[in-house]
Length: 206
Image (cartoon, rainbow, N blue to C red; front, side):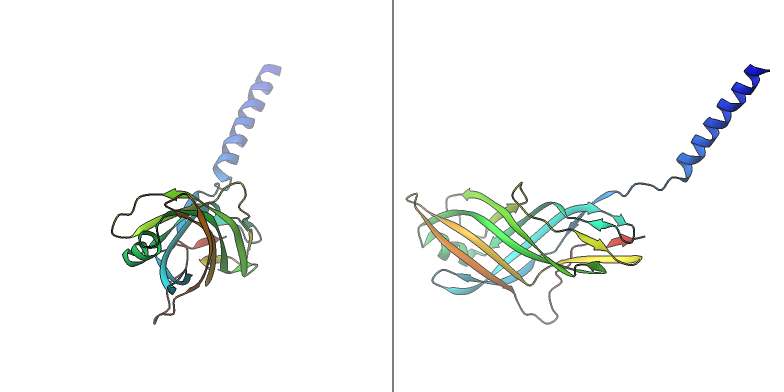
């Protein structure tokens, strides 16, 4: 009799465990969020305001419960100097690369705060001989990067977007090995219609 009771209890425990597994909420999946190409007008040495194409991406949860939080992670991106800027800013000025940091505001809908700033994105030293055409410089999140978190709003969707202004603190590398500091202050280029600065896809809020 005692053995039958123990076996029945064990069977019930297994059944309860199985039901719990079936009814447990699935964990949010990690998703990549990315902008398209966004053109900013930036202050260049000697030649003044010029266009710079920027892309940025990060990873995060594809869904968040209302009142939860979203913190972008693994931020990466690129700065593309068009062929003319590559020729003038680098080759004609005896430069072959740069390093530095970048500050980038991020705005959001259905999140709090509505705007926050990512600081100290790392632009690792990238030196390469001049090749006619565009020059692409990469940036990334590292241990010194400060990334804000966003609180999820009401059920529906939340969208994060790259801000309208960027600041790039650069050390331009001269071909003779010396360096010249320069700050690129950038504002998103006005277009009609306005450029889409959103990271896609949207984040689902449950």
